[in-house]
Amino acid sequence: MPEDEITTQLAIIRRKRWQLWLVFITYLPAIGTALSATTGNTWPAITAGCWVIAAGIAGVRVSLSRCPSCGNLFHMQGVGTSWGKRCRHCKLSL
Ligand SMILES: [Zn+2]
Image 1 (cartoon, protein in one colour):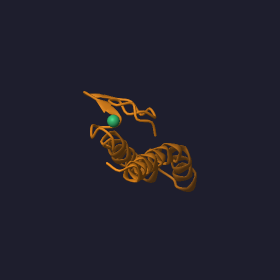
Image 2: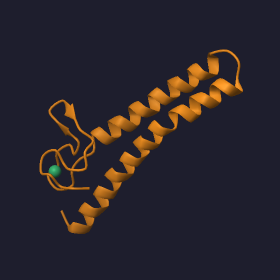
Image 3: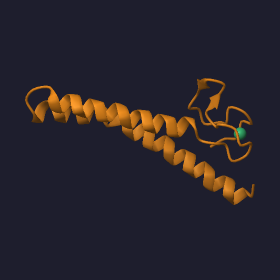
């Protein structure tokens, strides 16, 4: 794969990682807003449910990212997932 294509693919993986972190850091503000702006448990429960779905989608997108160098899953080896900055197989760095 050409070097500029590898750079582009690595940028896509970095963007997916940032999206995952964005989902993680929005949980407390979102649930706090839902708790303080509404009465009852319906909207906080809906907010938490949406957050779990968004976290799951973002986590799967990061975990299933393919390494542009070796073609294996960048963050997974076997069933283990590590969201480190190096490919689990060829050690290509983000
Ligand atoms: Zn690799």
